[in-house]
Length: 323
Image (cartoon, rainbow, N blue to C red; front, side, top):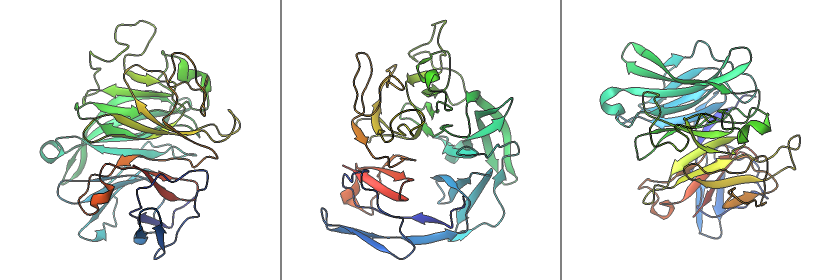
């Protein structure tokens, strides 16, 4: 599947229901919201890209983004640099995996460190997170932050985000083996929390437990591809894909607030089910909208959107928001 364009859009910040996902919009089309009397226009910024997964902006104004086959690209001064900034040499791009997230170190302006998550093949698909230093000559000083994360053609995660605490948060999928989400000795179906060099913070909830991986921050997550910290509260919001039919009733896409050491239920509970000791979502969507990202608006161009949480969704190729 090849996306014909990377579309950057601004959407109205209303609580659109995923139960009625809109059809994808083409370049130049305009969509409006009667609830907020706002509208947005879709503009094609860069055509002919292949599965754009993650976008970041550098302090000097460049846009860096990933393409699933392993390319890190750069858009600068209004143009796409034709040659890839970097190509991951050992990426495994089958299904929903490949090269996924990119994250800049909080001190990127001075240390030029950035992080990539991608699938690789080692007796089957797995995911690793690698740190590089960007220089004028390319990416150097490769350091593996974590690897051996369960993956598969589907449900490979994997979003990276630095928190206000300076720690690196990593979402992982259940690799279509739903039971591992409840197993604390597995990295699959979790949110992980690490120091910027890959070491484990001593205040992680399962440090010191012989039956648990110390990297784990939350568990019972099916396949999360969106996390961001809410400005003002520093709460960690997450979007998560619900069952796909083969592993449970369709729908049940979620928005959660992730908290230290908590169990988010998969596969014991899903949709709006409840269970003692497990967290149910704050928002649930059936039929599925397939939320593939999650981010709070922090810009100044559209003040009415400040503090609203947005998610790009695969179903209908839309941008949804909630206030």
